[in-house]
Length: 305
Image (cartoon, rainbow, N blue to C red; front, side, top):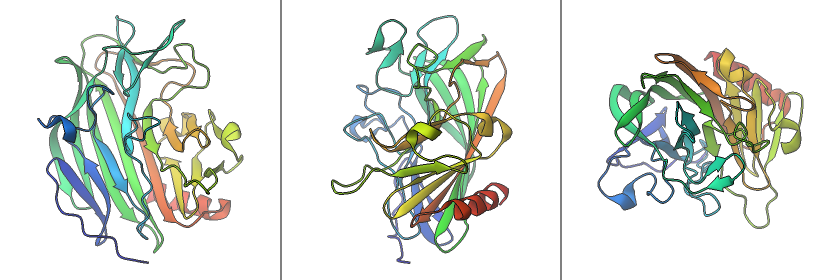
């Protein structure tokens, strides 16, 4: 195993370490005055914190930031395309265009911002953060986000990502997706990991669960864990609580490599005034390619660690 490069502190960012190795950089500030340095420019909207780069213990980068095919994809983030109350379409915390029923994807001025408001804990191996989800000064949601890095083996570590969203808008809200707005199969929204596109001579990553394999077989289905495996890396996504394990996985391998846990696959997720919904995804970041037995064993270990 080669040592990862030491990462210098960056304003507005937190470097996560696993033992003595820097394994991820978390850009948590979205309110910096330098537009070029902000997580997302206004043209793609939905400024939000993100993790990038995320690396294996062997030094392989397994995230991608602002790729040309989807410039609003930001490494690992919590991204929701539609938070609505009495007004439709809702606020877009995903970025890019908004899918409108009977119209399709439309460029709208409806982007929201996730703003870091404070730390409850900030250590080299993790943090507990509070964020405000707002649109033009109106706060809709408050989030408590917990992110931590945990060593598992000499070839794998786990990124534990928990998000608890509380409706503070004063009215009932709901979370939607392009699927709930009329685009079949596009139920994305929630935890999302954009993986790196393979090289020109490499095949698309493989994807499998304990019971199925291939994008068509796993996309839109629930599973306790799911593996996305590139040429020399594997990402093992595990549902860390009951609600997350019930959510279908949103999976792409051929168009681009990415995996998300869907909050609103077929129907909108209601968020009553004052209510809270929480999701936990534990991702094992591994060198090499995992098979099913190894993935199942690591999933059990990662979720209970």
